[in-house]
Image (tube, rainbow, N blue to C red; front, side):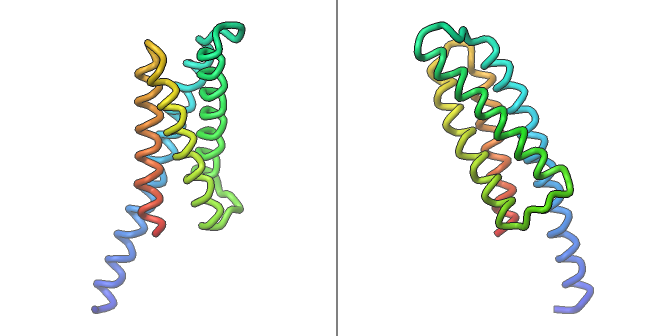
Length: 128
């Protein structure tokens, strides 16, 4: 492989890394907003399933917000730390989507969670 080919490959990898990192951060922002909205609509004194949805929505919004900050700011986390944060976000988003699936009217929130989990998965693939 020539140095020009290596340089182009490295540049392409960097561009993909930055694009996927941005897409993940953006999906986290959208998911955080959708989850916060869904949680705000749940009655805190309502039935147990409403309380569960509210708690999961709040947790997902907080994890997504933290992940977005890690991805968009110059953080002190190394690659391993970023990986752990993004994997945690993906897991929480999938759990939240399943809870939202059980609630009528929460389809958009579930979709935002799944979209975020997918963006996290894509970004994690670039880290490999």
